Each structure stands twice: as C-alpha cells, then as structure tokens.
Amino acid sequence: MGGFLILIVVFGAAWLLFVLPARRRKMSHAAMQDSIAVGDEIITAGGLHGTVKAFEDDTVKVEIATGVVATLDRRAVAAVAREVEVEVEPEDPPAPG
Image 1 (cartoon, rainbow, N blue to C red):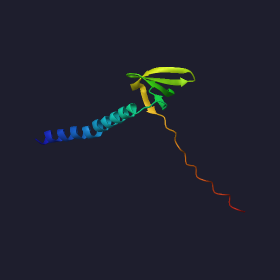
Image 2 (image 1 turned 45 degrees about the vertical axis):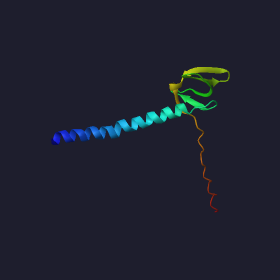
Image 3 (image 1 turned 120 degrees about the vertical axis):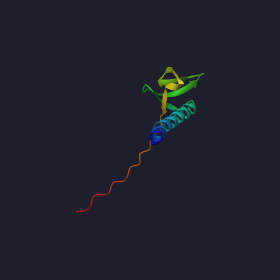
Image 4 (image 1 turned 180 degrees about the vertical axis):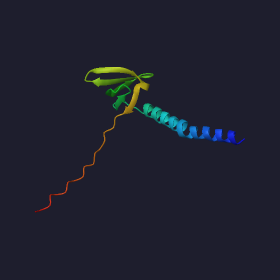
C-alpha cells in the first residue's frame, strides 16, 4: 500500500510541475493569437518581424517589408512585438577636485 501511495504522489507532483504550467502557457499563447489586431507589430515563429494587414479564416496577411505582404497561418505568430521603455538613471556629476 505504501508503494502505491508513493507512486500516486510522484504522478501528482509531475502533473503539478509539468502539465499545469504547459497548459497555462498554451492557453495564454492562444489568447495572444486571438487578440491580434490589424496594425499590430508581430514576430513569427520563424523570426520574421512584420505588421498585420488583414485576417482571413485561419491566415494572417503580414507586411514584412514595404510592399511585401506574406500570408501566414495564424498559428505561426509567436509574439506581439512591444516597445520596451528603458529607464535611464541620471549620471552623478563628477566630484570637484
């Protein structure tokens, strides 16, 4: 009976450590893909950066260069590019002397 209990505890720990976080990542990634709008800057799974121009059923039209529009599967969108604000600390003035 003790060996069976240890086996259940091990499977429960594996579920908590591996399956639940993977499910959360998958759900948040799907929500990100569903929230994409025309004009968003995106990054594809292949590393291309572009701007969303239009949507069709399961595809996205992405402008990857001026006048170059590629049709991608919606699942190929890896991330929405966000501008990162960098906070710069002012430098201390040099000490006199």
